[in-house]
Image (tube, rainbow, N blue to C red; front, side, top):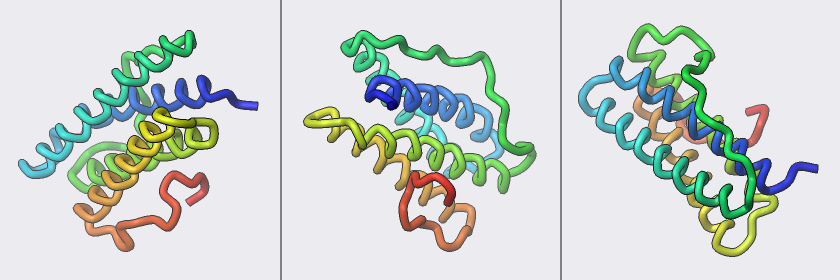
Length: 144
């Protein structure tokens, strides 16, 4: 059985990889896209910092960020950058959705906010990319 601390550790690892991805994809976007990418990266940094505090409170080890992450596909142009941004947000949403299962009280509200933010940000990236439908029926559900 997976514990809440383990689910939060998984979410932290996803936040680390999202920060890395935003650092890579932003340079391929137009000015408006770069602005949104910076906002996304900042949101993930804020979530990362909050998770570090929460894991310390739970006396759970926090996974450290890797020096680099393998991207799921080549990142050569704007279309790939938009696809990566949506992919990253979907992956982050998966981890936060899983953490909802065990979270209670104020922590549940924090987890739900993180889950919602990732789902909304993923929708924005799909919309910017012209993907239809831009929304998914169950954000963060594996196998979509």
